[in-house]
Image (tube, rainbow, N blue to C red; front, side, top):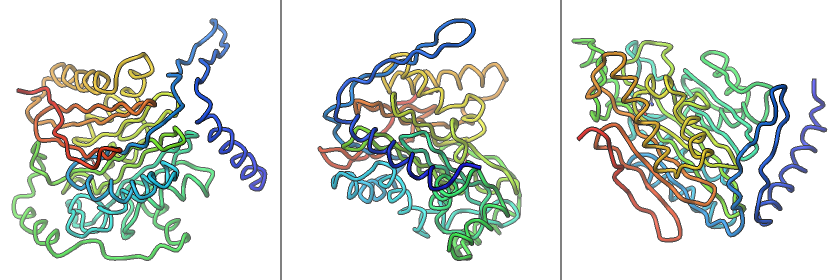
Length: 342
Ligand code: ASP
């Protein structure tokens, strides 16, 4: 097993290197030698003069961005900003699709999913976590304090308790009442833009030119117990590549997982696409697969937001109704994303 003190030392040196690199300008395209030849990893090159920017999904992105901006404007790290940002809706019992106050599964249990990714490609995730108000903090602790990247269910809860989190009842009265109403029909059919889900996904670029992201949700209301969506899955609900860009998703998680959505968006940016074009192409992939599978696109909503290393951003979704919040040096505002289904 790696010696923990050595690990911390290496990490500290790496942070300094990246922080310096942030001000050094160009990053080199790297060549990796494999048996069939050389593989080039495309670097975007622009690192100097980074201006902080943070993007997050839906209306609750506004208060979340405010918390993130406090850190970004004081030259803080994007990782700290995204964690602080998404904790706002997680802790708000009136936000009924994230954290405390989230709608339960069909057994009346509030099960939470979250993940986080930093500029070094460190990752941490929890899924189907019950009784803990801030799953994003637990995901970060998985990333920083364990040799693993993902903990689920009982194991995630055990770990959260070991980290000092308190066991709480997350099912608020309003959510319980709605669930009891739902039980009368017990019909699970998520309807696009009937907002009984919604995730906060947040991606940020800091003054050092570094990217990080966080994603947290209570998932689809009245899902089967044990159902996990895209939001805690690195590459699906969130992906960050500090050389290229970052992306996060919201909507029907099954569809996002099917195309490894956020990894796809980042890889499209690696190929030279703008964040906007990358989001559009990922949605186009969903459109195509939905048709191939003989499913109705009208029943599906997925939205992506993306940010590249230069601070350019984009967003696109299957159907109208998805918005996101952007905070940069021009202020914090909500933007309606463009969409495919007219
Ligand atoms: N993507 C989330 C899930 O499938 C829900 C949402 O963002 O609306 O769990």
